[in-house]
Length: 205
Image (cartoon, rainbow, N blue to C red; front, side, top):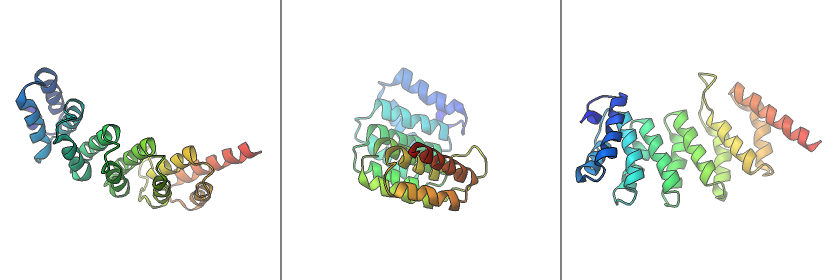
């Protein structure tokens, strides 16, 4: 199968999509997707597509959720982890394991992009959870992001943005902003925080 032979090329991704499009009802199709996701495979593009197709068309299969949880927790390809966490947060947000998985990824994800996406999912679906506020306060200070390119997204800023949007009058929000304006190691974040503080000051006048 092309999906298992084309390395990280987009041919593998296309093969998975075509397989599901034309042979979704064939019993071997689901088996192929499971094998692609449960065995070590170098084709992260194909495996990312397999996650998407599995969650879309076989959501009620008993093995689907455990597979997605495992991929989100520990897959070696961050784009596969990212797709798995996205599917979990959108379709299984009420599962008791989903938020803990996302919190762990937001804290310990190998890439800043993975941590950022985990935080984005948390702030999209769980801002009513009182424990999330404290979690974001911690992430705004402790995330280990170090800027290498000007366009990179800083997870610490994502946490602060969520606090500003959803909890602007929480006592820790202005406290954190003033601290980050001075002490954050990321110059772009310090500048952004100063802009937010200036807006808040202008709104009070």
